[in-house]
Length: 427
Image (cartoon, rainbow, N blue to C red):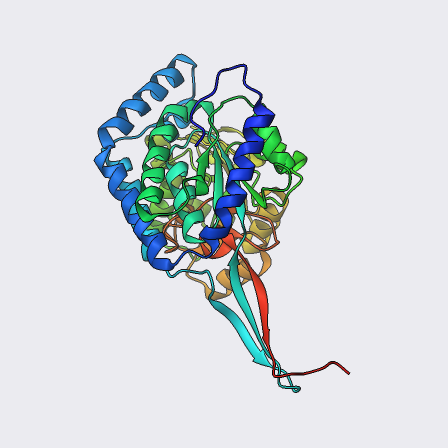
């Protein structure tokens, strides 16, 4: 198993070897039993809990380097681990183990007039390349999800989280070893050289079947531009909350606050607030006051700035910005129709929410907005595979092919057809 390499090592050769090892591991993994995969996952979770002190010590190195490098508070929050977050990683792996095994499940079946019986059956994708930045927990989530779906995975984390990811990866390998599964089923790219990303995007000589990028706009844009293999990705999370004229005021205040400020650095954080002009007098100030009192900067259109003295003028650029910070753009709109128009103009098609008691407004919002996730009377921060009951997610996909929304174990499979006959010949 590849461990470390000198800085002068040939990155292309290193990556080619990783690709070959992944392809070799993928075949027995695709045929591994549910019990064997779950045994590996249980052992991984136990190893993470057993090594929590070591993981936190390695994370402290990453945090120190990040602070020295001047990383933003939002990035440092994504990078930081504590005992609670490490335990959440272990529990997330156990939740994945409890999920139904998608491999081999029959999606649909039917009989033809000629007696043929046809089944559409889930199969692993093969080898998945995951490219991510500062979130060390992605190492655990991605490794466990790919394993449960019968896929080998190549993990390329960012240099910011290199120490943390290495410590977590070691726990995953322990789990594979304990269950008798190939150690190359979950590999971590051992170099921070960006050339390794380029090699993955080329497909490693046909050995990578799908790329999943999880990170900032520049990373995802590069992956979508250069990848020669299919990509499950979202470019950015410009998420909206629309407060309808029928919204309950207390609910609107609480949901908007949570959607924006619970964690500002995640892709499901609300970036734009739209408020129905019909309730501007009753709803706007209480919502904005709550946000501003908790340190959120308000960037409003002309009417919002007139009504709320702490707001600063918004520009067109604000409507297209994923802040990942305690900043929100705010606009008054004439009802659900104008809200939908604004969202379809500026949204990244990630997640949108409507706060409303009017069923007609909700149905129109759900029917006319083409985003991966739509919520009614709930925070956009529920845009998460774990919150959807998927155990965890490898990312949120905003494309329209194959996987959309949280990418969990089912989305990490493809399918094949099994056709059973008794001697039929095609005339």
